Image (cartoon, rainbow, N blue to C red; front, side, top):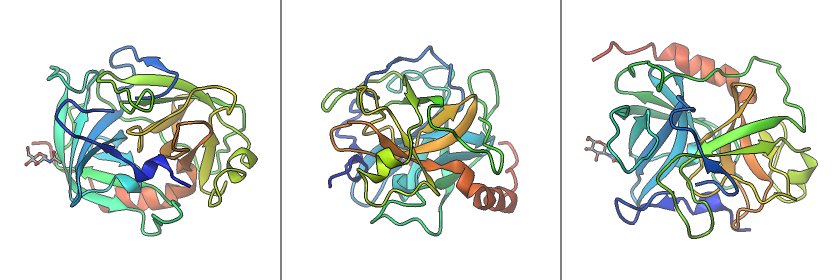
Length: 250
Ligand SMILES: *[C@@H]1O[C@H](CO)[C@@H](O)[C@H](O)[C@H]1NC(C)=O
């Protein structure tokens, strides 16, 4: 099966950018932790979403890895040079050691920024879940991103959509490598609402806590989609954050 993570949003020109299906434009700066990643890999230039988890760390999907990554925080329109934007180069991209690109499991990565961000009302970290916290099917969550709004349409402004957590069976029926141990099944199959190409790496936020990371879904953007379950990776996240103490500001 073709999955859209295999087709990351390829930036054909400076104006090519990616959005979410069935959503709407977000109120500017209502997602102050939201990051836009520009990624250079040996093959191509692409983009992903991500989110600030500490003043010097962004969390995203491991499949968004590249040899050079730049992060923009405080953005609404990604094609403009907004005064609120802070652009920072990634110092270290740390993929989960068990990331498996074939079966798309353990799709989580931490990006250490070259310097700390200046925290303000448009740029600040999001909370991570507590250990042992369970996310119940039916929970209403939000996903934001600059990914595709349909197969061929794109957007420059941040989009948001509300999606419900599904029973894991809905994903295990569709995706052979889905595992509820480390993944979350998100998006009602009866609604035309989903994360899509270019949204990869963005956060699933439920009750102000980042619970998931956009990982993959169906080629045509038909829900549900699979998200990395952050709660399963807390020990690894804590180890990395402890190992790399905050850099001194500028
Ligand atoms: C990131 O920014 C640096 C410095 O401005 C630049 O040299 C590099 O090419 C950029 N990389 C990407 C992927 O945009």
